[in-house]
Image (cartoon, rainbow, N blue to C red):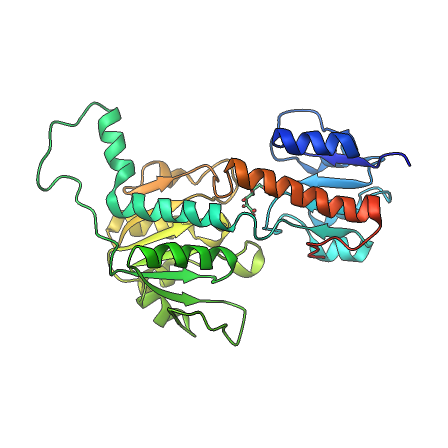
Length: 322
Ligand code: 8YV
């Protein structure tokens, strides 16, 4: 049997590349290894049986509608699927798969890293040293806040949220959570569920956001919700940048209502909202949530397991989302 043809939009870790090249004819779009815009994607998809893409690739309804009939499956190298128009894929009978579970710990680790950096002002402190401006130890210099005993509010107690809760409990934090959609709430041992936004936000010394992107969550953290957080709260986002109103967040950092923010995701990545360059007490990371060697290998293998099911074995892919 001849090998199926795969459009692979990004360069993946070596072990994943090797397995993909063994089992598929690999088609690579021309140009740099980043977000693929619709025309380049459609041109490269000609004659392909499947697409292995990543978050940010333009798989909107229009593009999916114009994919060649040969495409049977889209496997995204991400747990988030906001960049893929799932209804359009369903309408065309194209299976869509993602990579759940394997990135939960890595992403929770980045959320915890941001929480720690914000609480202990580590970014500011490092910038001071790099600017050669440290003049010596002082009792009141760069004082942060102790996390032990503080309340961590997890927005979206899913797989990643649960891993973060486990880590935070180990540090003596008190866990509160809110799920926007799943009702009734699952019982989450050692965590307090909140049924409405205001009570939840009022209980957040630290708010960590783990909700998906897309129209339903756009700008969820707006000025009103930021105002409902206690003065001096910390906000961390490792989900999707679109869930935050950037202007409102910058404003709250400048006014001092928020102590700090830590962001790993941004609207319109890789560009970031200009205000973050000058906002005080903001720690910025370039979408590192799942970026560990172990996790990226596992994500790649998960994509290939899904592609193999559809294109080689003719079975249901294990992580089908549409
Ligand atoms: C991905 C992510 O690695 O899985 C997700 O949804 O945000 C990241 O962990 C990245 O988006 C590339 O697809």
